[in-house]
Length: 452
Image (tube, rainbow, N blue to C red; front, side, top):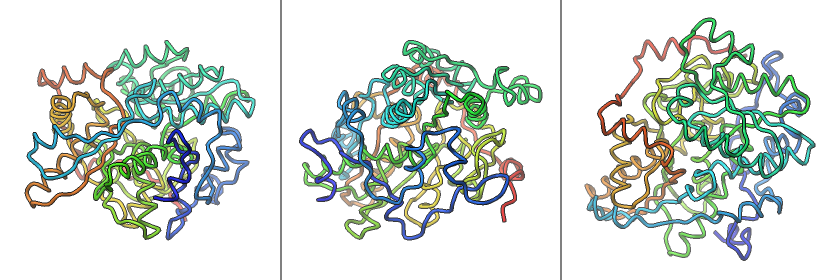
């Protein structure tokens, strides 16, 4: 706690990002070149990322300073508020103390600008003119569009087609910030055309959209690729969330017994959890860490820990992660930001080391929990964040049943103002739960690459 306070300045905003790699008892497996099978070097990543981000990706330093131009933009919404959910506690009749960190106060309405601003800054410093990316529900795409506008960068976003159709207002926000938004799979790339030739009615996936964005960036020397989750430097940038929460809980003379986060690619989860995991790894404070994912895309709970591609067209390096297979196309659930076939390598590694407890939830139960939260606390969560709400509520009910008082912290990573159609569909009984059979999971995993 003292270290974190030292890294905060007078406005109570972190002066550095926290890098969990410095405290890992066992180093995470290296990223491999798909052609040679050997660890990738900076030159392998240079066509897609500026060198500053590549160095952050492999850094073993515990603290990486946040550039002042980035902190200056952060000040528009950081530090974000930490609330105690007293009305929810009362509704659940629980002795638990429930806290939530609210990231929906950012201009884009989620946690994603924490890394979007940083990535745009480093690309601008490197002389890049354009950024290309993918987005699921649109929270990442709208955040990068916002950051691109601030730094004068053109932004192209390949949006997963099912979300492109479900969430027109999120697409409208990206376009308002000046970004070009394309439904993926598209006819603009070889990867997209190949998918459409095989599956003309494809609803898309984050893996497919990543392939399209990487293809465009790789072919344009003035364009770089930007990713909103999964990679180490992205998770690093999000740790401002957990650092602030530590200080804010200290002001309340409390510390969490349980930290809960929703997981799709791992960015908001790492943001809230990694600083607390770091404190645990250093022997400072103990804590349980719970990661909640959708049953319709269960990479942590039913995937395999193996080397896999991050995209469908196999344009990316191989990373060791919990994966359902790069060709896996999830059902079109409304939590579009959690519909990714793999999990962040660092999150996956910490699961393997036993420091994270993964669980999976159906979307109907998560929507029910989100509405309970909205009707007690007044904030309508994004469908992605509803998984964290459900996990926190389950922990609180467990406290009631056991008669124990524990502090529960979760990250409410975004609001649901652009997701009202999802809530209307839920109220109309039009949503369904989906769980994959063992055969479906086995088929998805059958194409994993062979790595010696």
